[in-house]
Image 1 (spheres, helix red, strand yellow):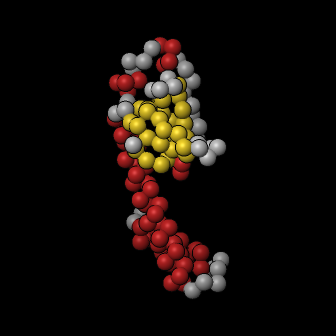
Image 2 (cartoon, one colour):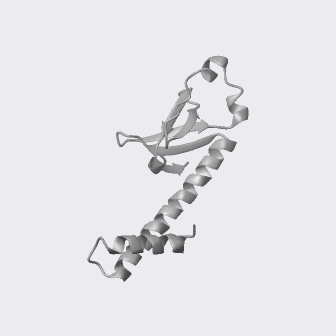
Image 3 (tube, helix red, strand yellow):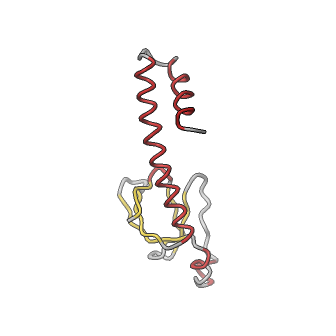
Length: 119
């Protein structure tokens, strides 16, 4: 789905819920879609990096604090971990990004919307 198509669909849907003129709704929707697409691109880059190397990154925790982590999902790194670490419970939270935290030596996860940056 292209950005323009998404903007048209959202604008048409939102027009019936507000008294704003069509062009103002379209401008707001367009800005929101562009922001979301930029964030999605950054998130895709991060997930790709996490699957292919060790990554230093930050995200916002549920309590609002910022966490800096060093983690990976790279199979060759995970296969070198001790059997004890491999047997640990890998978190399978729906809609979360799961990674192995190399500093804490444990599985961690966070919601995609809380991703901040690759450091």
